[in-house]
Image (cartoon, rainbow, N blue to C red; front, side, top):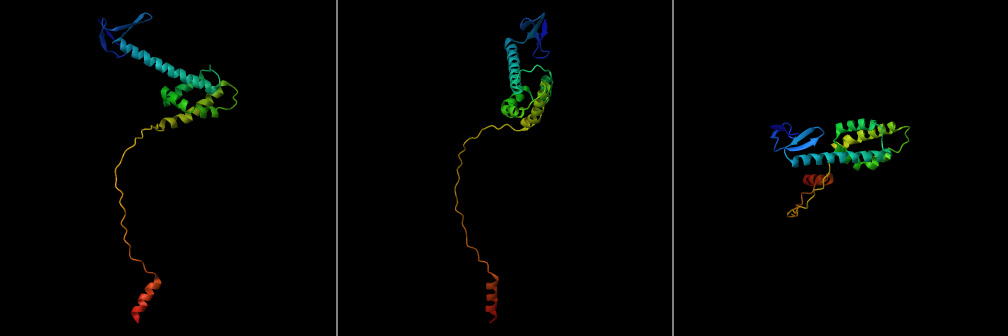
Length: 171
């Protein structure tokens, strides 16, 4: 009997050769174990990225956040940048954002909205800015230095000399 692979999106594989993962009352089928492990590793790395972003945001806000407004704002940030780009942005600009967040807020919602405004204003510029990569290599170039040949040109005559020349020819 043929079953569908969960990763390959509809690829039909034989049930006897498929890798089976039991989840609740269902069997999930994959082409092989390596494919399933790669999906699990990708899932773990995405979760680690989210946890790192959450810890930086908690540090910027001064305490762990329980307000759900932060997650709504996070969805807005994800329209501009992925979580990996957002994490890189927060790591690079952590001190700048912390300096701008030094204000007194009446409640947590105000601090979340202010943080969101800062991130929205800075994030698009950060994403559009090309990342600088140091790939300078020393190249050896051979060239010859030529000494310029300068010929003395004719000296220009002033008005006084021209009058003398004209006056000398009239006599």
